[in-house]
Image (cartoon, rainbow, N blue to C red):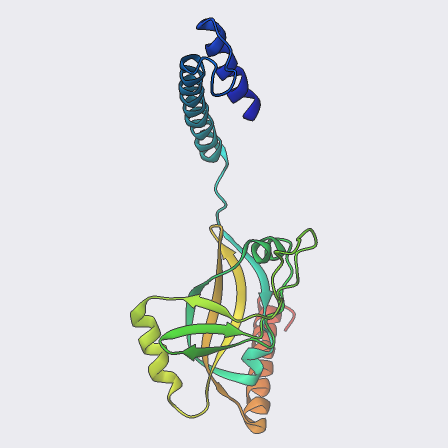
Length: 216
């Protein structure tokens, strides 16, 4: 870019029959050259902007859902009352690390800071090719929901024993999302009952499968 500026200015000066020689030299040619240089730079900027936009349109947009991490333990340790889908504020290196499929949400939980909802304890490793701009792996990250959803969650959190637990972290149509559960901690006997119910349900499904195959 600097070379184009110099060449444009020099070309305009030669057309005026003089070369800028400091304060005493011909200034009109130099001024005209700079004007032409500015016009050339503006045209170049507009051209590159159009090319960049055209390339952006040509890139296919990511669609569908790609799960990055799941908290399978949460459904065993908690009774899920409600589930919300929230956006999450991420840095560039965090997005790149997630696209590489690297994250752990087992120790994550949601909390309120004033009227804002945040996610803490989720581990997103540093990006391998990151520099000094790399992120802190376990830093708190802001969750993005509608105001009405935040009000509903805030009302439920006031109840004793309520915890906000991330169930999964995924990309949906190219955007990072968190499946956040409003959950109640289970006691030991509740966990045993949940396991028994789950096993009974699986056994019933297996029995139906055997019957359909004519085994029984």
